[in-house]
Image (cartoon, rainbow, N blue to C red):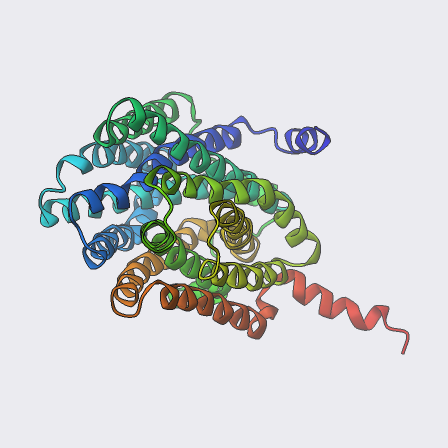
Length: 416
């Protein structure tokens, strides 16, 4: 209770808590859909490559609309963009199970599902970074991530309940109803966007007037560790959600009911660990923590090739959620301390664009590896991706302001 009371005392802006409630409900809706997509498509006789290609269309929607979303935010406001995206998502998730008789129509809906997701994430994250205090960004982003994780954990439980009493199609409709209600809540309860001048004053930042904004290339380079972290997470998450349950059902003999619960255990790991990981990031440096999370996560992923007991699988996927899923919010916090306030929306667009690029590439490659070489090779290449991420963050460790401060302070504290 002490930790929660401390958070509530430090974060008194009710809009931040409203965004957390929003993303929690979005997580529930997404959790319902995510836990059923692969199973539903498998029942409709889609093979691994077709399932992976549908994920590609979803990622293309995110990529195509990420930068336009940042422009819409600058033109109309983050609130208006967020409400519109929530309502669009409500439509796309509700109709999805009814259009899968044709790959083309399913791909069309998944494309706009991705567009809606881009608007939701960029809108929520821009509002959070603009309203969070300079010294509270890591705490705010990890609470936000915990809200997502809680939603993702509750979503599969809801989907299992609905499927038990009704059908998979009705479960998707329930997800759409949750998203629609969330959009109305944001429309009626969220305050207008916080003015840039007020953000700069609260963060002791230089005024934007007359300042040179970073070019796109320079902006992306400055947050390259955050972008790579989100790319790797998008690659892994999109691939694992689609193919890990199918692999475990086919090769390890788990049931469909057990497979539906797996995303919930992934989210549970993130929920239980992400805030602690965020505090470690504030204390020891974001990249250092991200590096260790990626290293532990890579070993955990390899474990699925040898585990045969369902309980051990659940433990492993919980550890995977605690490690690799915690990288995303910590990388968002790192981005928030690197960029100036006027660059937040473009930074979030780039950050989510790399996430979508991972979602675009990951399922296509994973599906082909699984189909040609088998599930274990697919698992090993996921682990290799996290090893590459660890090496990348080691090479560019100086991008983290905490690392630079530590290196500058070291000579002063030396007695040699």
